[in-house]
Amino acid sequence: MRRLIGLIILVVAAVLLVSACGRKLPAPLGIQLGPGVSLGTMPDAASNFGGEAFTFTATMTSGTGVTSWSWDFGGGAIPNTATGSGNSSSVNVTLVNPSLTADESYSGSFTATDVNGSTTKTFEYTVGPTQNRAPTVTLTYADGVLTATAADEDGDELTFTFTVDSGDVTVTPATIGPTSTYVQTATVAAAGFEDVDFTITVTVDDGMGGTDSDSVSDTLVTPKPPDNAIWMTVDKTTVAVGDTIVLTVWAYNTANPLRYLDSAMVEYEGFGVGGATLTTDTFNLGAVGGDAGDVDGFWTLVPGGNFGLVLGGISLFGPYDADYFVDDVQVPAGRKYIAVNVSPTFTGTPGEAPAGSTGALFNVTLTAETAGTAEFHFVHEYSQSAGGAIIAGTMYSSDENTHYSFVDDQSLEITVE
Image (cartoon, rainbow, N blue to C red; front, side, top):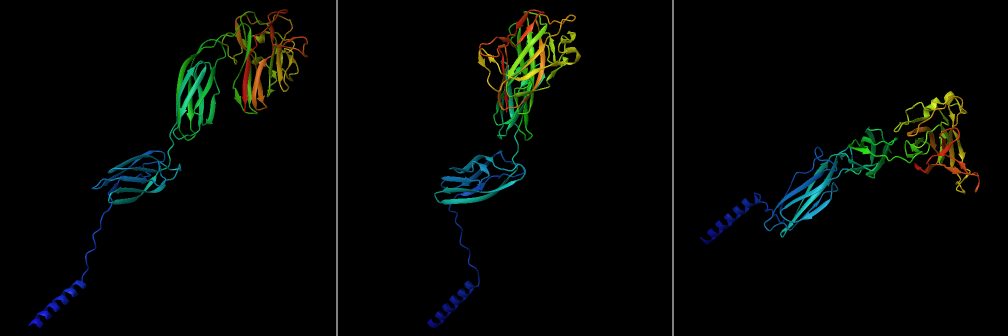
């Protein structure tokens, strides 16, 4: 009987063993040691572009609380890494894409840690081409000076262009740049002495299709010069070697009439003269506020004369080397001078600009020859040697015998690049 029971037990054990060998055992259970991690929406090239802001987010689950988390954006964001703690993460970045035309792909990772361990998730994202952001500009005016203050989030070089919308004024320089200096100034000037209302607009252009403009309206107040003054203006104060400027000489005589321009002597450096024959079109003495381009007919009333003003033009004397002395000091080498005379004969009755008139006497075109700062000024009195006889350099006559000197102490500078 015992042998029978033992046999039965042995058979049952064998059956159980065979049964176990004929089927698969269940897999071991996986154990999550670190926090659970869920990442938010990733950048997409269709709607997220280089230079734009983006917020990376993550939420975590942990029975003990997340002690630390860290991002690595794979080079596609500024900043490129971020760290913190807690069961949620929200990091603001600026997306990076060096291309202006193509999408860029990046690989990043996020790691969260609690007391039980760490969990790392990797991710992929794309960034669209960097989009240009337009510059901004504001324009202000004070005491004859315009100040344009610009900004550009992309750091592009900007070109500043000033446009006169109304008012008989000029802006110098009219264009500046491209430049990375975002605050620029320009000078407002007028030919006459009356107060001039104006509106001026500045436009900044980043060269990438982005522009902005601002305007200012104000009044240019121009103090009147002293009696019998002569002075110069130029159409631009900064030029390149080889470029030209137009120099205009003006007069303002309140004390005496002006009948003859005996001499207007201008000393300068770094320029050569172009258009050395002056015609009646360049002599425009007229009323207060007269424009340099408006011929008023005064000089054409002179009937002929030594230099044939009416018959075909006036010779411009020079340029000559300035080999003379001023206040017994020799003029530095390299300087030149030009002189303009209108000394008609007394055939007939010469014209006369009455006291109180002002306007442009003549225009001369000059070509920049040497880089640097070129100074222009009138020569009032000079001599051919130290301590020699004084010769008047800039003067006019009110009649056949009476000569006067203009107030001519102006100094004008031009930058040649």
